[in-house]
Amino acid sequence: MTTLTAADLYPKVAHVIPSVEWATMADDVDAIMRLKQERNAVILAHNYMTPEIFHGVSDIVGDSLALAREAIDVEADVIVLAGVHFMAETAKLLNPGKTVLIPDLRSGCSLAESITPEDVRALRAAHPGVPVVTYVNTSAAVKAESDICCTSGNAVKVIESLGVPKVIMIPDQFLAANVARQTGVEVIVHPGACEVHERFTPHDIQQVRAENPGITVLAHPECPPAVVDEADFAGSTAQMVKFVEARRPLKVALITECSMSDNVAQAYPDLEFVRPCNLCPHMKRNTLARIRHALETMTNEVTVPDDVADRARLAVEKMLAVGK
Ligand code: 13P
Ligand code: SF4
Image 1 (cartoon, rainbow, N blue to C red):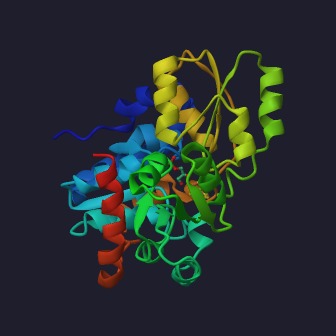
Image 2 (cartoon, rainbow, N blue to C red):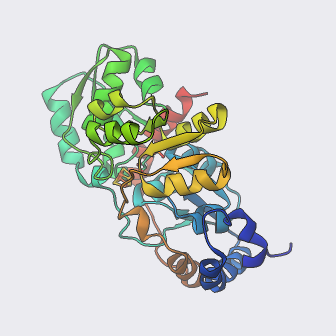
């Protein structure tokens, strides 16, 4: 198989990366493309990766749900998860025979860090018999204490599948509040929040609308409900992409992490993107240099202890069965 070079790949990023900037990335891009073949590796990249990773070197892209589903079918020996730690753990849970690497082991998540297995056990003890629905943005150890997982893309379906009037929905208080409003199911919450999405305010959207009459505003459901109320649509990162693909709004604002707009703008060069975005410092730890280093040295492996993995996998697999 021929190895694609940075020159071959440039058209995939040309709308959002100037050629002089791409030239500075070419050495890392060429090395990564070669290393992927040598190591029999694939790169799974979240929608928040910068365009040189997302459109340039990755093999599979998507939201948390898509990356989990795709990880199951990976046949290559090595998965590089360009995203954050919980995503790499989920890939390892679902395809345990593979070596899963992450470009920077410090790529955490404010939601995952907000809750421990002990917190989940305390919530269960306080609300006996109420099922625990856990957002995938958590450690495998927290998933292991849960009945079922969800992502922002399937949270409503997962909650509705349980057919109960009340759930413990952790750890994102805003996702839980948004889903409660959509489903009518009562939610017991944990006070976690995404440090990127909790910062948006209704005023941000009002200002964008005042400055851009006719604009379509899409918000992520990790935003507070008052922000979602101001948007035209709320959905996971993949659902935002689908919305843009189907409706082609001439001017659009994606109320989420900054790289989303760059990546969607590359795919839809005729649309105008207004960017009141926030950066995720954890996602931004992923760089070409770190991907290259992980593949060169085969370091930054993500593993999950067997006893935790078996219980966590069950909660993730129950979630995946809901969409089928
Ligand atoms: P989704 O891509 O599943 O919408 O998740 C957003 C997110 O913040 C992941 O960290
Ligand atoms: Fe976590 Fe928010 Fe960053 Fe996603 S964007 S990894 S939810 S802190």
